[in-house]
Image 1 (cartoon, helix red, strand yellow):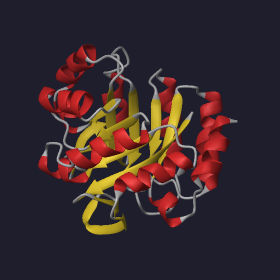
Image 2 (image 1 turned 135 degrees about the vertical axis):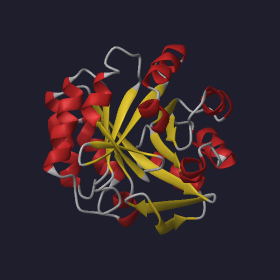
Image 3 (image 1 turned 90 degrees about the vertical axis):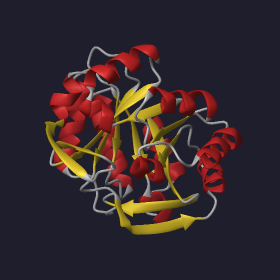
Length: 246
């Protein structure tokens, strides 16, 4: 199981939003590359990048920053935000050097297309399942669909997807912990046989321990993303890495 420190990029800076709200932003650093090197020094073996400008515009935007993080850290990185066609997938994997690309909105709208590109890029594409009340949210979290996360995930159990990244957007950036319903959803998704990464709501070391406890029972729960908590100091990356590797 891995800890994925989150680096959310907007306007070339390292920021965090509350519940995906672009009008509720905190800037945590002017240099995302420097931040990435910090998390590597504390033991992170993967990084989770979000191109917030890309999520809003429907295409990757912060190319130079992302390319610099990959080059300077040498760590495998996954990224979401505006990746909705084959050209942007190719750009992300081949030009920016990302290890894994996260697709959410178009996977919901065109699941057959997503299954096809997963076959073209086996083990390199992740399904971004952003949820509110266990229903899928799209378009940078601006819209909530009538599709349940379990219904969508079930469509991809036989697809060579590298991971399913489940984010409860009601919790994201709110520093209120991971609620029991989210933990239940994580266990159910992992029980389908899908490789699952938890995201949204990580606030304290107890949240890390609670996810690890599920992962000990469901080995398909392969990681947890943490963002605001590591910037505000309520989660220590080095200690979290130690907990999940035990």
